[in-house]
Image (cartoon, rainbow, N blue to C red; front, side, top):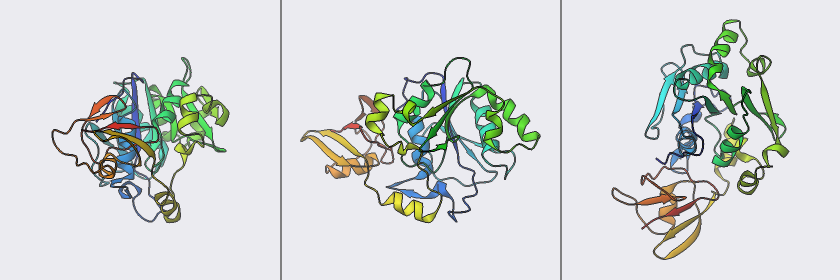
Length: 273
């Protein structure tokens, strides 16, 4: 796994414990081009943030395989929604990072440029960087100070289960589409802000799964190739190469493991032997 140093002291938290009522089955296990939605979300954060990445699961929840170095923390109480997951996730990383980017499992188009933009928008003295993207608040695609864990737990104890209640008790920086896209990298790589698109129903999932995979560049002995690939394994197959132990893979200038499930996004360049 490639760990970036561009966001020091920033952790990643993926909430996986939702009941998936509308989907009718666990979103964490939904296949995504040779991987799963949960693996993709966790691996996107792991290749973007500089700190630990944790997945918050419901008590007893079975999870699909996760990327190396991604750990799991269990919600102490089931059925309290994303606020409980937020409290557990922030508390799990608070001793190792001052800030965490928090997302849900079901965001297959989450782009590292979006994560970086949101985290860097959190100034000193503020508690939350909250995107208001594509017309909606995005509390599960936001950056939080990890020290908020105690406040979230207090609100839960009072019966406040909605993230909106948290925002009434802390300093929030709101990022609308214009402010988000003022970042040149994000405007180039995710101009429609599809990072915040989630899949809530079987129809959502089917429509998202049928969309073209991201366009990337594969550099190899036969020259650069533009291919469509959501994972490293697909990219290698597109140029007729096989991954395996000892194969040197370079992603955007950094060496990484030859993991077939490693997520790729628009703008990536992969170098293979």
